Amino acid sequence: MRVKSSALVMGLYLLFLLLPIYWLVNMSLKTNTEILSSFTLFPQDLTFRNYVVILTDPSWYMGYVNSIIYVTMNVVISLAVALPAAYAFSRYSFMGDKHLFFWLLTNRMAPPAVFALPFFQLYSSVGLFDTHIAVALAHCLFNVPLAVWILEGFMRGVPKEIDETAYIDGYSFPKFFVKIFMPLIASGIGVAAFFCFMFSWVELLLSRTLTSVNAKPIAATMTRTVSASGMDWGVLAAAGVLTIVPGALVIYFVRNYIAKGFALGRV
Image 1 (cartoon, rainbow, N blue to C red):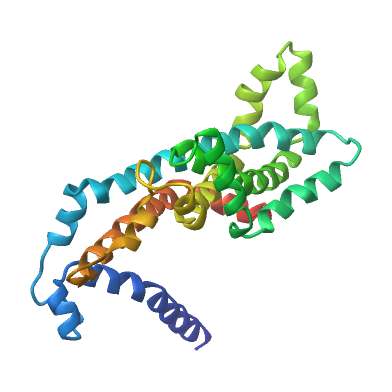
Image 2: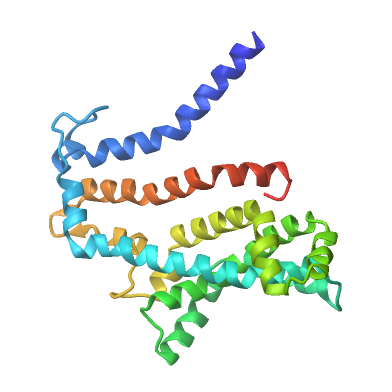
């Protein structure tokens, strides 16, 4: 009886989670007339026009291209900075290390709105406004502390004797770090990359504030669906479905790393 109750609760919970996604897909396959005129669980007049609009209109599909570009740049930069920083926190004790570690996390706790105006003025002054690198660097303020915190936990779980043995065997630090140490914390790198990707992919305020045309992300593009004929609900729903796909693919490829992160108690 308890097993059946648990299964029922889990089924209802999954239904609750999947209902918005189903309704989004349902709307993306309808015309605006059908969306506004009647309540239907399935498209009565199935159409793929909404997806065709997004995949053929540069103002739409370039939003996905821009988002992928700056998100990829942010993940690479965040990991490149966080890996040596996390190694230092996990292997050495120095004056103010605990305070510095806590200060990094306080940056992650602050809302993006706090830094929108300083970043806008700074990047406008140095000519980085409306560029991919501007958004990537702005997101590093939030992703680097998170990546350092995650990676430090994984690195602390690797015995220091491995470092000492590698030095005795004649490994230089770069060679040891790349060939021996990084494979040992591959799960941590995967988890950190996942969280960096997800934050940068869904963040809207900074990416919209720091771009206008050339680097405008899909999240900002989706806010311009109002036209003279009204709100284009079908195209907006189709854009939402396509926006979910990259995140779902990332979750699929790093699912094992995330599971290991939960098992190690760091995620």
